[in-house]
Length: 157
Length: 189
Image 1 (tube, each protein chain N blue to C red):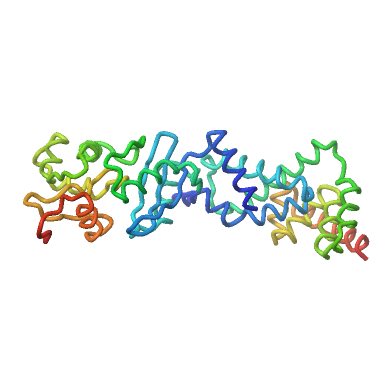
Image 2 (image 1 turned 90 degrees about the vertical axis):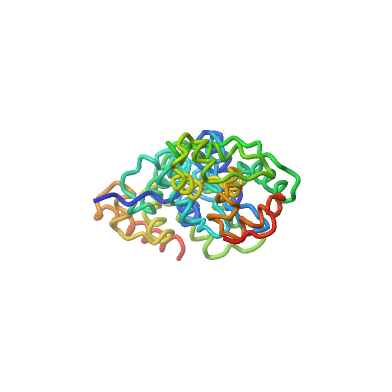
């Protein structure tokens, strides 16, 4: 059976750019998201012709995005998103929307929980795909997600 | 989001990852699709052709790294604008012939040399491509022309002057020939 042909890369941009950006904003914060977005799509573009399976392009892109988010955090010395950034959101003239406060709290989660939450709620990915994106078992993904949600509930209560 | 995508395009171009850059262009006949590789213009889609299908075809036959990048097609768009205004009679664009080969390629290269304001017959094109008896194959090579307008297959007519065929539809062929001043009296057939 022939593998499905790869669609023009532009179709991936049209379909998933917004989602990738949203996930990255959740994972690394607004400031880092733009850089990670470039890195994600450039890496995808480099690897694209060699991609053997065109069936889950969305999952593939989100996996790359997740790796770039991790690289981003590593480059910043494994620090969680600094609390100062969260505070900046809070002192903006307009009161922060519920979403801003939520994403700020998501950004402050430990990396695995942050990624699991962002992939689940930012891009509506099922557990199995979150596990694939995180490179862990579905059980571990479920655990990260639950711990992340628990922590968010406490933070935002 | 738009800035992010513009920046991505620029970086993809810098890193040599724009295998196929495409853009649309307005024309008196409707929207054209223009696509190029680093080597040159590789595909012109006429208004009656499905742009999405053309892009899928390019992804399969050239490279799946197909990105919309209007700036990469600026020169092609500029020359086509001038051509439609009747102010340009010879395109000066690098062409990428990779979608054609063999006899077809020889026919298309011969077509590319037909000057503005002149026409040739399918038989003449077959002869120019090295096989005067392959008139039907020459016709089918015209029909497969991936770079119409710039490779002016509209200048190829049947012996005797009947229009023959055109991928963009006969009215477009007729209008192009009228614009170039080569259509005499009665173009029936």
